[in-house]
Length: 133
Image (cartoon, rainbow, N blue to C red; front, side, top):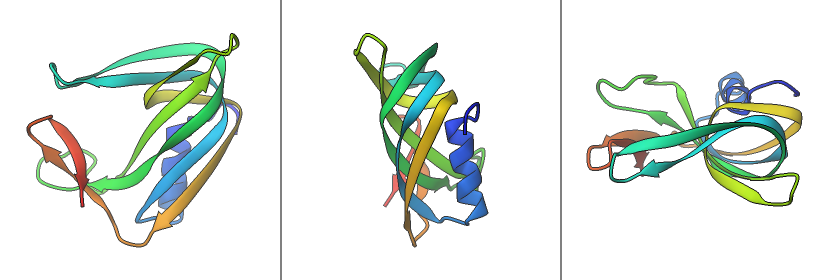
């Protein structure tokens, strides 16, 4: 829906329908979005927020849960998304999606549920919570 945060909306759906894990695909349009990349040298994400109308050309990712000691949001769903957006000049930018990610017109979200719960555990080498398959 317009003016909703894409990630928050997915988390609400995951909780409402008690989704264990899944694959996400989405298209639509955003008016504000935050994208970034993971800097291997600093072991941190570098994010930038944009306020412009864009087409959400491709958005894909997954749903999992944090697991392990001393992890914040333990038991909360983790929505991990990467996006490509199209600008008015037909250029494309993309990266790891963060918040805010505000829908302008529509967000068409498709979730393919996986019955087994999937967890993330901290990988000290990168200081990231990676999928534990």
